Amino acid sequence: MGKSAAKSIEDALEAWRNLTAADGCLVPKIPQNSGVLEGKLGAYDGHMVPKRLAPGNRAYLDGHLARRKLPPAPREYAIWDTELAGFGLRIRPSGKRSWFVRVRRRGKHQRVTLGVVEDLDAQTARMQARRILAEVALDGLPRRVAQRQAPTFAEYVDEFWRDCAHHWKLSTQKRNWDAIRLDITPQFGPMRLDIICRSDIIRWRDDCAEGKQAKFNRALPVLAAMLKYAEALGYLRKGSNPCRGTPRFKRKAMERFLSPQEYRRLGQALCQAEETHPAQVAIIRLLLYAGARSQEIGGLQWDWVQVPRLLLPDSKTGPKTIWLCSQAVQILEAVPRREGCPFVFPNAKGNAPLKLDIWWCKFRRRCALPDLRIHDLRHSYASIAIRHNMPLATIGRLLGHELPETTAKYAHLADETIAEAAARVSGGLASAIGLGA
Image 1 (cartoon, rainbow, N blue to C red):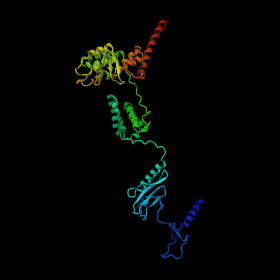
Image 2 (image 1 turned 120 degrees about the horizontal axis):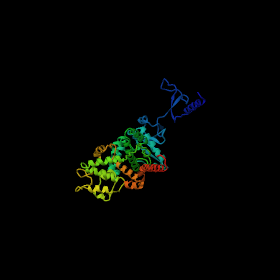
Image 3 (image 1 turned 180 degrees about the vertical axis):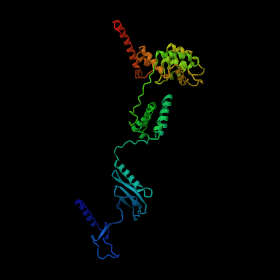
Image 4 (image 1 turned 120 degrees about the vertical axis):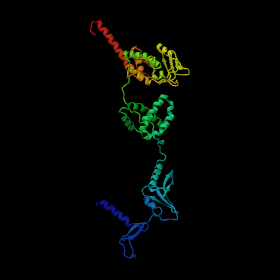
């Protein structure tokens, strides 16, 4: 045994021997056979046993102590916890016992009752006492702004849709609602908004790597907008949007341009289909001549036709003017008007625009162009303009692009035109100086 351990034991024994009658009760070291003790017991003739709990005593407050039958007293008294300063058990003369904690607020001591022993167990009372003591200790210091309790994503969908959806166009509402219902809610529905983190977004992205890249690319901006609005509502901390910086899948640009031979095939097929489907043929021809989007011509109304232009009150980029060439004007003049119908190309009932999707899928196969989309007619319009040396700014005005960057994707076509012209010039120079081409 080390010297330090021996010294500590000796100190403990000395303190034990110095116990007085006021500190405990003296019992003999060796039990006597008779109940009568002979002589007088000294400090070294017995052991001092601590007295029972008296008013102001201290003990570790737990369930065992709370269940003990503590001695009654004419006045209430308290037993203080030996571990947590300020935590105590109050015993009233009636026998009622309750947990409390003593705190000091602005120089004054206060006792905060936590609950009676029968209703509140010792462990819970201790936790509440710790919380109150911590709050008092931090009183006066700056505190973080309380954050609203975040709902689950499924509960938040209705709130977001009610506040934000009416600011979108009908087509945007349909597309975004499909993304929320089919792609986002099945992934994050049961999760609380404030626990959705970047790793969850990346995991979702990885799950969409096989065949669902387009769905992820469309749904990610919708989720980002929803979580941004959740920040404004106080459900999320500012700047904590986990969608920020998440990359989308890189997909090959869908650029398809009609060649002169394909233009001839398309024109012949349109002439053959004009007798059976005049409205569909007229729409396709207008798209070829105007370079407009399919919904801009398909949903055209007579009030918007102001020859030689179409004045659209709304489009993908807002109000738009589409300039018409003489061929496009002739097509519109040949379209019959239906009484009481505002649409230029109505459906059979006359209550909505004509749909082209089913007819177009069959028609393009007759042209031997199964991969041709309606939107490719708009790309082809831009390619023809480039080949006629029109500036990109002018082409952007014709197509109704809001940003110059949108038109810049056709710049490579201009480079091809310049390279072709340079080849012709160099070929002519080579012939002039007698060199082979």
